[in-house]
Image (cartoon, rainbow, N blue to C red; front, side, top):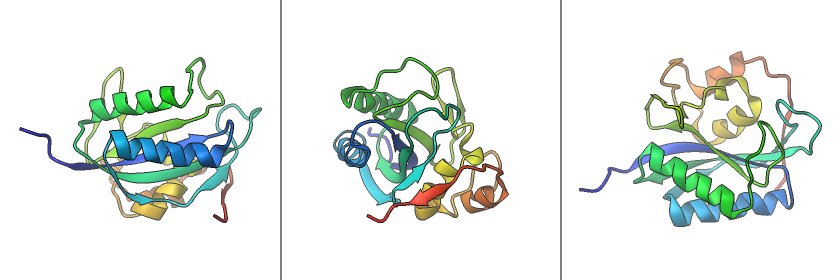
Length: 165
């Protein structure tokens, strides 16, 4: 019996190489390996979080329709990141591609490998703003607030600038 289709919200970011092309390639790879992209946000430029002495990021979000369970989706994401050239050495380092599972259906998962919802998404404008484009009314399953309400109540001072594309 196959897994039922579920929706996940993914956040993508790149601050190395051709950032826009990296986002487009990650979307192509997600469609080939993970499921069908139902919606894509606009692309935003943001300052780096946590480690400011690096290039700015381009960020976007996608709503993915997938048959994968969350753990299998994470493995696929890590494969895509590695195939695109990501090497994981330190937290908040520059990267060709970073794909995070922000939300997966209404699931709450906490294992050593995976935490859903993403534990800091509600504190970060660079995650919330792209998500607002595609899922403003999606309710955070722990905080019980919509993504739009979380955006308006967070205190992240970093700017999120929409690119004309």
